[in-house]
Amino acid sequence: MTNEKKIKIMCKWCNVYETCHIVSQEITDHHGNYGIDSVMMAKVKIHKHFKGNNYCKGSDRTITAPLDKTLKDNEKHKE
Image 1 (cartoon, rainbow, N blue to C red):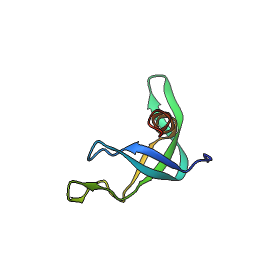
Image 2 (spheres, one colour):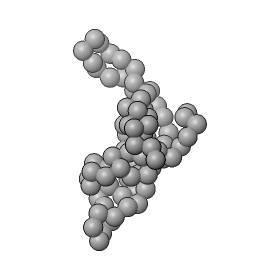
Image 3 (cartoon, rainbow, N blue to C red):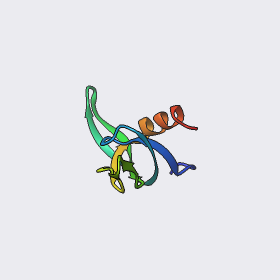
Image 4 (cartoon, one colour):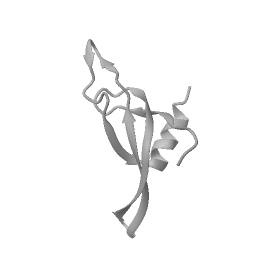
């Protein structure tokens, strides 16, 4: 598991980088160009946030994303 749990990820519903945290990690098989690869996936919990006056559709959701891509994006958008 990564040392730092709080990260920023792009909310797919409102296209804004929001604070979230990693809930768990698991290894899944991915059928790529070169056969079956094992990919580390992270379950990420997006915190509640607003889109306009109402809560965003992506608020308070848990999504699954590739861990290496998620951490790489987090390094770019760290404050």
